[in-house]
Image (cartoon, rainbow, N blue to C red; front, top):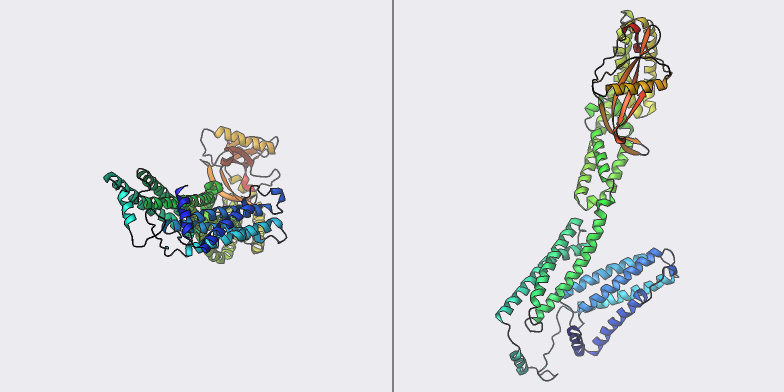
Length: 580
């Protein structure tokens, strides 16, 4: 008979009859619990009514709870001699695990009616498990003071009270530990204490997991797991030293029992911590967040678009775009914050970085809105001043015969251009706010065109060729692509010359809303201005916009600036004799 079984039988032999009955009732109860949940034949999936998943989950929880209760019973001791110290802690740990599993099973079964036979069977199993759990708790509740036992006299099964002759004889027959053995025992005790020390962080984390304090984050669980692994290393050394000592020696046996209980506690802690580590690792694993880098970059773009309002106010087209997309941008910020909330709660490096970016983007947006409110108070008056200034220059141009005022880069075009871009800001806030100013600028342009007709000849006579600054090696190729695009639009057109006013490409990188989401846009642009023959006396300038799409393998596109039937203004013509 094994040592533990022999000790159990000896203990049972000293118990009163009622204690024996209660003890075996507990064993029988646990044995019955196993039948419906863990019987030799598993419940077939086909016999489970919908939802099957809930019943399977409840069955699994009950199966695990019963396993925990069986383990708890083996370490709980008896009503007369309940577990103490490490064994008591181990038993409580197992009971707590069983209690949680039974609670989860109860929640899963609560949604089923009493007529559901499978659910009713599992409920009975759960009730029996709860009863067994309370009985084991009753055993531990009586364990504050161990029941004293009498030492039997040598050579008989009776106790003689004060006669210790037999004990003395037994001790005299027990050989004392040698010097080396005592040193080994000392090492066992030291490594046992070290094991228990490194188990404490894990015990604390499990207590928090079970509701006693704030829930631990993944880094704390990982640290506790590392400490538990150190405890396992210490425990192995203690066990190796103990193996070199006589296990039944009076000085060795108690330490062996403590080491055994500590080993069981170590195993239970490792199992729970590994399970929690696995759960949190799945929750925080970056494989669950495939868009992390994209969302991180998008937040940075939002922060940039809301920053430096003073510079943004000087670029009304960009300001209008920011206003138009503000609601969509805010929803994206909120989506990102919600998506990565688990990472932030777990205080991972990626979670903290994303949380910081979310807060920064929101703070920049708040400042942007405050500045916009002040800007909008002055905007209507500013638009009116631009329109009035354009009309003033037009009148002066007619009176003083100044055709350059009506040119492409003249003062009239500049002032009306400023007004038009400012109106975009109002339009972004609602068409009704922009409507009066759209009518004003339309009327102003009509008057300017009427005034310009009186000076059409003078305007054309003063127009010059566009500047030509691009000298890179691919110039010839780019000009050829521009000519191909123009001839595809206008068959039979005669190209006289090609000018590229800019010396370099302009790179544009931003995030645009289309297709119900923000997408990164990254391209370079350059304009080729083709000088073509309009008639026998005039040439016309037709711009072709070139784009290199860096998001699609640097694909080059050429798109004419004007529609095929577009009516050109006087500033787009020049004398044919001036073309070189």
